[in-house]
Length: 284
Ligand code: OAD
Ligand code: ZN
Image (cartoon, rainbow, N blue to C red; front, side):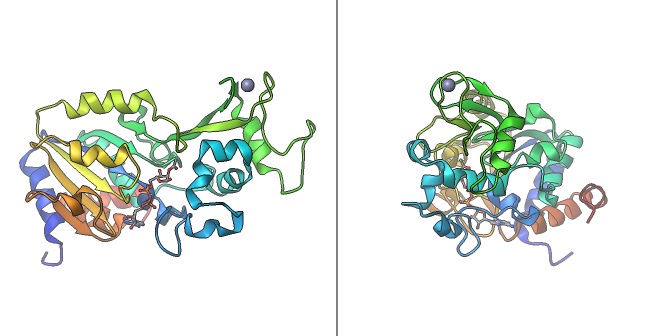
């Protein structure tokens, strides 16, 4: 129909004309906002805009390892808000699941720590959590693992409450160091799995589609993935704003849809004749 935006139409046609081509998704907080999780940098609604109540020297300090060592409180406040379990995947997550079901998924590189990709039943082998997740916790001094449930209990303590061991924050029973979920903070390296898998995925000369969605492409090294895409790949941006390499080094073949991730998901599903599948999965 005439209302389908050109970029979505072209993407669908490319996928239909090249049935062996698979898709690599590169995603960020914008795919989870419709699930009720705020993103970081959107004006007004982004987490960094709303951190003023935490009295941080600067917003990103909430994810800064040196700041955390001195004052874990802002991170605890934020973690309480973001803790997985309270949110359901968005239609965009289910679109990615459909790419898996239809055997068209190569990989999902996600910056999100909300684990909604797993929640949407996408298989582990496809998911690279570039910035880690709440799935495990470790001592920041000696590295000893700390049980997930025990960390969650600490997190759920109210402001002035302490539990039987007397502290507000989870600490290591070996050395007393602070416990932190395996989320990548500023000043920490990304998981080796991120680099190893990207080396593998980006070394293919086969045609590939990479779909970038819901990210401001401001945090490196993740933000460099679209730039490192081989020339044989088709690059697609689905986002509320034009970002990163799509702004600074736009290629003639790039496909850009400016709008919401879920809307893009439904339009693409419609073009691919997957609309009924998507509606069934997402319950919308
Ligand atoms: P940002 O908040 O920086 O960017 C979100 C992007 O998604 C923006 O470009 C928005 O315009 C867009 N957006 C928001 N809602 C959308 C929607 N419904 N549909 C389409 N686009 C939408 O989030 P990230 O790029 O993910 O680090 O941030 C990267 C990293 O910075 C995060 O992983 C986080 C943070 O510090 C950690 O959690 C360790
Ligand atoms: Zn320790």
